[in-house]
Amino acid sequence: MSPSSTRPTRTGHRRGHGHFIGTYGLLALTVLLFLLFSVLLPDTFPTLDNVSSILSGQSIPAILALGVTVPIASGKFDLSIGYALGLAHVMVLFLIVEEGWPWPLACLVVVIGGSLVGAVNGVIVEFARIDAFIATLGTGSMMYAVTGWITDGGRIVPGPDGLPAAFTDLYDGRFLGLPVPAFYVLGLAIVLWVVLERLPFGRYLYVIGSNPRAAEIVGIPTRRYCVYAFACSGTVVGFAGVLLAAQQQIGNPSVGLDYLLPAFVGALLGSTAIKPGRANAIGTLVAVTVLAVGLAGIGQLGAQFWATPLFNGGTLLIAVGLAGYSARRRLRTDAGATADAGVGGTGMGTGTGTGTGTGTT
Image 1 (cartoon, one colour):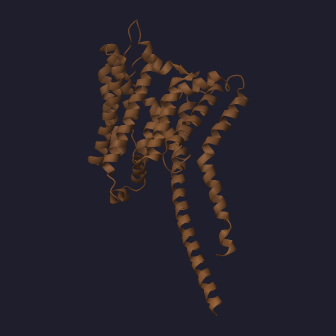
Image 2: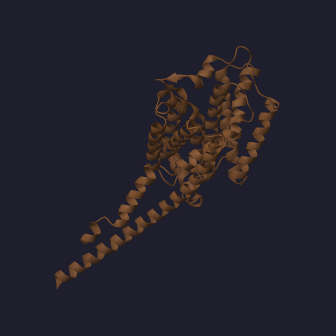
Image 3: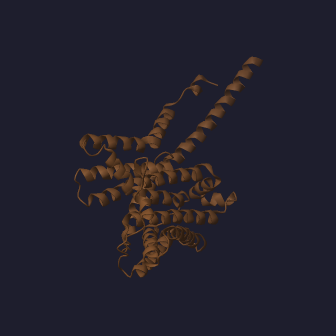
């Protein structure tokens, strides 16, 4: 083996630096943004009250972003989540206020209903062979119609006694001095990290998302696992609807649509971090954090109301572009590593043959 083959190449250095930036760049940006706004707003931004407000206010978008991460890992998009969120939160309040159900039973039924709706989305996409964008947009529109039918186009308002305190504490409660919803987000991120990174279910979804044909060839039941992915997303959306009901305490049939864009921004931007090139739970959590810090900072600097949708829309375009770039870069890196291994093997064979010939002579 020649000495040059043992030295790290300049390409290897660039690859290592690029990998580090791609993996941890978004996390570093979060820290830099927090420090920047802390310097610009020293009296309000770096305070426990502000941190609690950010954690509480962004918990539902974070949960939704984690939910859509699962079907995205399989290469599918669930555009019905905004409509499903609105239906879920209205349904919780309808069962508690109008039907007089105990709140734990109402919450359980809505979460299970979310799972079933997600499974129906998966069946339509996989077995009816309808594109996920069109299928989930169609089912989402139908959910919006059901929401309007339940509310009769108005709002569900609790009576004079209000909602049960134990129910509203699902969102308003605190634990260790921090809002309880922050711990829901952390717990969900850990669960999805285990499922996607450490269990066969997650590995199958990644294979399906990268090459469905190859997944079928190796024996992975692609249709079944895609239905599972949509059902998982629906379960998370149902849970987010329960939290939204506990937060809003009024059934608003159109409120869910406001969460569609932030959820996809977080999930797609998250696919450029931690595991660049593929959707992953920890990357989504980091992306939601940087979005939350950025929105809180520009809000406290006095930005107009239109700054939030502008920020979300622009970030979505950047996220989609970066996600595509990360995926292409990952493929090039894998191909380069394979080529380097082949060159290295050829060099070793040549060196051995030369040495043997010289010794014999």
